[in-house]
Amino acid sequence: MSAPRITIAEAARHVGETVSVPGWLYNMRKSGKIVFPLLRDGTGLMQCVAVKSALPEAVFETIKDLTQESSLIMTGKIRADERAAGGYEMDVESIEVIQRVPESDPYPITPKEHGVDFLMDHRHLWLRSQHQHAIARVRHEVIKAVRDYFDSNGFTLVDTPIFTPAACEGTTTLFEVNYFDDDKAYLTQSGQLYNEATAMAFGKVYCFGPTFRAEKSKTRRHLTEFWMVEPEMAFATLEDVKRVGEELLIHTVKRVLENRQPELKLLGRDLSKLQAIQAPFPRISYDEAVKILQSKGSEIKWGGDFGNTDETLLTQDYDRPLLVDRYPSHIKAFYFQPDLERPEVALAVDVLAPEGHGEIIGGGQRVHDPDLLLKRIQDEGLPMDAFQWYIDLRKYGTVPHGGFGMGIERCVGWICGIEHVRETIAFPRMLYRLRP
RNA sequence: UCCUCAGUAGCUCAAUGGUAGAGCAUUCGGCUGUUAACCGAAGGGUUGUAGGUUCGAGUCCUACCUGAGGAGCCA
Image 1: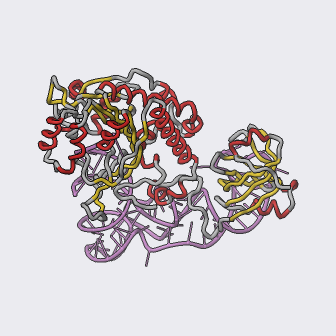
Image 2: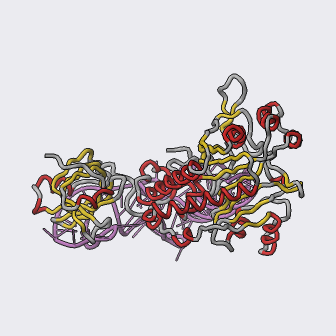
Image 3: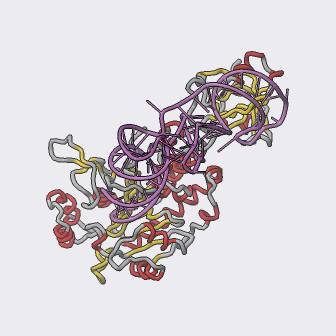
């Protein structure tokens, strides 16, 4: 008696059949004796058609009185129709209401405009909207593409700890955790130091997990909790790091274009901007970047780090990500290998996304010489004992090695063309945003 | 932490220092192909908080709270 249950995404394969679709009422347009409930089930949207003369009185009245986001199981015959948004619609035959949202407390997010604050307060519900849905699917695709790239290129996933006993880089502010008897612990700001250990064990590795920065940053590019993928390779130089970063981005963009075009179109993304993401990416040195910026009127002097406006200025002449390498050592972390021909610069590279989306990759070659590492740790005033295991890696078979970190949210934001990273993660954590 | 801007109905926003308004949402009525449907009607307010100026403050001043954008720092 009961019709087969399908999802909206499967509707095309069931034309002419009577099926049941469980879902939620996204919206409804009424026109007297004919109503058009718009059904949402997580896989898509489908317009249903309920005609009064074709239905028992009670069924029609039940449908007509439904409220937004009520949960239900709609049963009817699937039919192709150009007038419907998804191309298919359902002639309703019966309905089972699971929960009717009471009109005394209606669903707060209406099909009209809302402000950011209101939407963020209702993030748990906002996720149901088409835009947020599309972004989440692109994020899923990005993560899958990134994992597939590494998995099929000889990398082993070895995840690194979230609780760490000391700062990885010594600069950024960390979240302190008072629990362990041993010592104070901190939430990780990078898995990189541990990656170096696993790279010496497995050759090529990556870790992929959440990262925490207690910075008082309040911009559209910052989250206090964000996800980062970090590859690390033994026997690798700066050039290898640059090549892998470029390949990873090209592979990822290609996969999103292959599998998530409907989502990108819904987001209004200019696909030609993504189709332009091909090898080779432009490569310039920090020295050249400073000259370019100065010629464009920036106040930057050699030795200073780029601000957000500098990054935008630098990237606006290119249609693909820009690789900038050989930064002054003093603005990079202690573990970066200095250029032996120019010790004042580090073999570090940042990848700046086009269209003002900023730095999405940062990495480089690491110090592999034991004496140099000891000196760097001392110069930075870092606690030697906390880094003993890290120094061990240089005592027992040290090799040149390198890697990078890519911020998933910034990457998704760039690919989607979203201004603010807060929409690229389900529940963003920011300086003034802990709930929901 | 600093700078700039904002806070009025559930939501998005109006309102020369002079009666608190509209659209959406909700309720009621109408409409058999709607596409953020449309048409008519109703209910809905301690204008972020506390002071102050004024005959009179949503509007001007001070402080605070909340949020947004940016700076610094970073992915």
